[in-house]
Structures are given as structure tokens and as C-alpha cells.
Image (cartoon, rainbow, N blue to C red; front, top):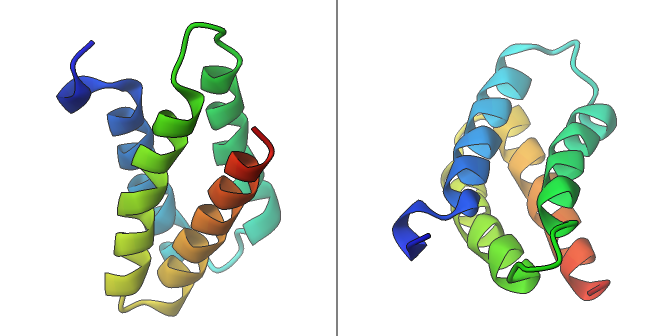
Length: 93
């Protein structure tokens, strides 16, 4: 699979969609919503023939950029928490 269409592309799209949902719904709790995304990351990381570090870095980098550009506080909160969770997971490799 080419770098332009790797599985991280779908994960980046999912992260942005979830950030919009979190932004719009004040009743969503951050921790379980964040866990849902990280569970999806774990499904991909479970593959033994996979560049785990590259996968997570290619998700984290645009998520961090999105957090920097976010004007909505809840969206920014979700994206910052997601980037932190990805960093934490990267350090456990």
C-alpha cells in the first residue's frame, strides 16, 4: 500500500470526525471517547507485519497540527488528548 493511502489516512480522518462530534456534543466524556479511538489504533498495531511506529506517528503529526489550529476549546481538548495518548503508546513500543 502506498504512503498516500496507508491505513493511517483513514485513522486521521476518523480522528477529525471524532473531534467534530466531541466539539458538538457537550455530553460526551473525553476518556471513553478517546479510548474508542485508541482501541482502533490497537487493532492496527496488533498486526505483526506492520510499521507500528510509523503508523502512529503519521496519525499523531496531523492530529497535533489540528489541535494547534483548532479554535473550539472542546475540539482542541480532544485532539490534544489524542496526540498525548498516541505519544504514550509510541513510548511503549
